[in-house]
Length: 200
Length: 218
Image (cartoon, rainbow over all chains, first blue to last red):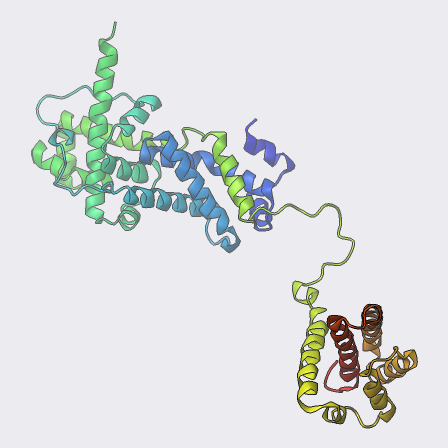
């Protein structure tokens, strides 16, 4: 049984936990953390590809949220509020590190990183499903700018207009980066599959 | 439409709203068709990365420590409260008369040193001449007269019954202060500081009388 379920053994709903957290209840805070920690941490991990950094950002996101919990009025889902805060924390941290949030469309540092156009003979296609571990590794290997747009759009479900506002780029740029990220992932996945098939 | 041109518009194709020409190319081109299928698959499968791992326990430990240090986590009271919860603004209400006592006492000391007893007496309520006389008497070094205090408390009770207990307590405290100060001064008549303390004690007593007789004060 997960910690979240243990804490919910007393049938404390998320709404009740939020109200009790506003009163300073430690157990309520922990329940909210347990309910959402995986999603937040996974987001941070996908965006940074670094476990230590992801944990620090997870901690910061929850702290910022809990400090403001008294202002939560329930107009939006709590998870939405938390998630948006986590994204902002991650993007802020990445900006502090002076990493390019989104590389300019035509200025890749390494041309080898650019996805190849699919022309000529047909390559073996991906199967009907993708191994999660392989996809995980492939995403971590993406250039940071591609990775961030891919995570925000395909993993977390944000729309291009939202991404553009958060990241500070144009919608067109967001679409372009996403496409390049997917192309790059396709290359990586096909390469890893070929390598696996080649092993005795 | 050839493959190169199709792939140039591929981002829009994947977002939806394909033209007839694009649909036609997809039907006729296995390579572009498999490319679109793969990219769609990647987009769909990406959702499985939403929740892949849990942070280590140290993350919650750090969060809890911070929340406790900032007072955001507050430990509940042990057991039921024995007295009703008093709004914070009223918990400090007792300071008001004490503060008034100090301010008035200071004012009287300054006034007395500047203008003498006569002007001080003029501020008193003339409808209670006996109390006025008692007040002047109370300024002189002498033993405390309990009958005077009783008369003062009677006057307070007639005008502000709720304040009688407060003034009774104040008089009890100031009389005890006078007694201790006089004992110290008698033990060493040459001790100027002890003498000053006795004067201060009687001034405080005078202050209590002044407050009791001044209708503008509670």
